[in-house]
Length: 248
Image (cartoon, rainbow, N blue to C red):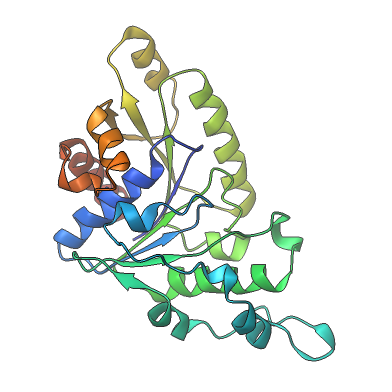
């Protein structure tokens, strides 16, 4: 299963990414989690203390592997060895990498860093088995058309409220532009109310689950503790089951 998780900043997509990685690993899956967000919080959410080097900062390697004669670019540089060299495993056995910043500009942006990072994603999406989790920015700029075709499911994380539809519309358009067909939604920081219920009823995509608002996740972040060690995981267990149902 290849899952991309997107949403605006602070909505909880990194928490969802980390908890799902933990749950899948505990279930015996081989899990790779790639932080594609500029905030780069996924390693700490997975309990990794070491500061991982973003792959976008491997300037010398990028230069050697991407730039060809007369300033041409190799669009499919060798990257398979990068995974082991620049990843860390947490105590669950989840392999974690940090992608780093990609320049916006879509398919037409062929700077060396973009070519290298997209090659990393192509390799991860098409070569890795079991579960791949991509913690994306809201803009999903890392995914080009060729890469996105290997994504089984794009999960949009939203909070209850009118802005949720704005976020969904943006993600839907970007997903359509690059050929992602399956979109599902997780409603985070949910507080039971008539307004919240109406909001969920208005979502046209499958709603995988609702994660109730809980200060435990805020405290876990402040104390730099993986959320799956201290918070109630039942909503996430149900979300994981829905993902398996949809993707299999």
